[in-house]
Image 1 (spheres, rainbow, N blue to C red):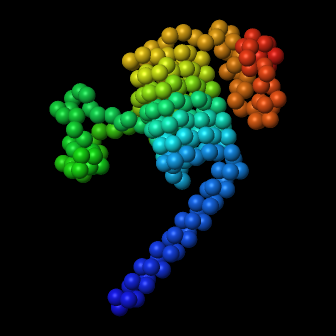
Image 2 (image 1 turned 90 degrees about the horizontal axis):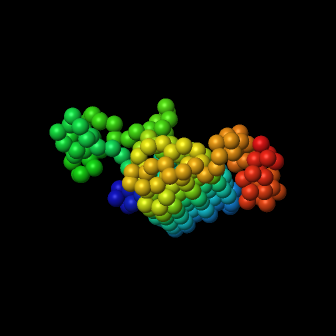
Length: 237
């Protein structure tokens, strides 16, 4: 009986290994076809969605995140449940999905009193009595939304419930607690608007053009026009 159980366990492990190997091979082939580079210790799951032409450096966490075409994310960034647009440049140590603790009404900030997740190894309640995350969508899939063509410098923290507009820039070391409008440079602790990147008219045209929605070949054909905002908006706006 013991031998039969042992053989059964060995068989189960072999089947699981073969199944996992087949799935890993399928994922590798999919990433190869979509020009997606995955560095060491990059975390993702079946809920993660990568559009293609992506580069994820080592130690990046993208559980249940959506990443648009052309976006790269640098080393040691933690961005689960984050919706990221196309052609974003995201620096090292970017942080989202930080969670919330009560700061008023509740006597304590400790999750053992309001959460059943056991963050500290124990809990006093079997219920969720406080919303630990703030979502940006009705389906409660994403805690942060980052638009298209966004540059996030190193060591930026973005709190739950925040939306970053298209073309925005976040300065290094910023703690972003509120939404950032499109084509706005923001920075500081907490982050505040510094200036607009372009005139209101140019920004309006860019948001109408939405060049990031063009197919990859069209973008490549017209890359030389991207160095001059006036020529670009005059030609395509």
